[in-house]
Image (cartoon, rainbow, N blue to C red):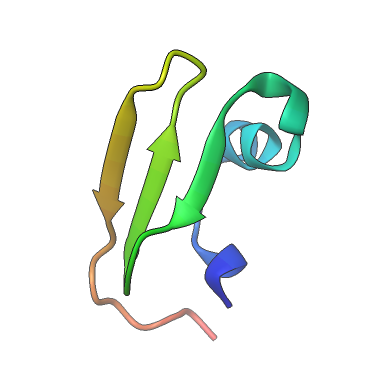
Length: 53
């Protein structure tokens, strides 16, 4: 279920292509950890809105 978090098409391609140097992984309930090729880490927390389905 963690892979169902909404992302733009660009972000989705970065996440799925291991040659980009970017990593995107879950960091807890509703939180995504993104690591850039230079090692910077960004944590993104999603709102508590229910899924659209």
